[in-house]
Amino acid sequence: MVVEEDGVTPAVHFVAFRGDEYWSAVRLWGRPSFIHRRWDQRARRELHPSDTVVFAKGCDQDPCSQFNAADLDE
Image (tube, rainbow, N blue to C red; front, side, top):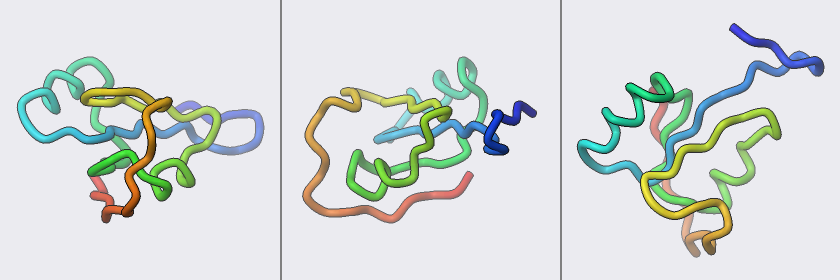
């Protein structure tokens, strides 16, 4: 476990995964700490600068969804 200087453990966030690409991402990044159903304001608020965000498609520069979705805890 890696702990940053400020005492925060970096998390891995998966965004908008829906199918088999999930398991490909798990092989590469490991199991996520959080699964966000879509890129929304809630997902953005939960990020720490040391976290890693993995998108099924798109990127953090894409517009956020107008509506928040419930997240899944892995």
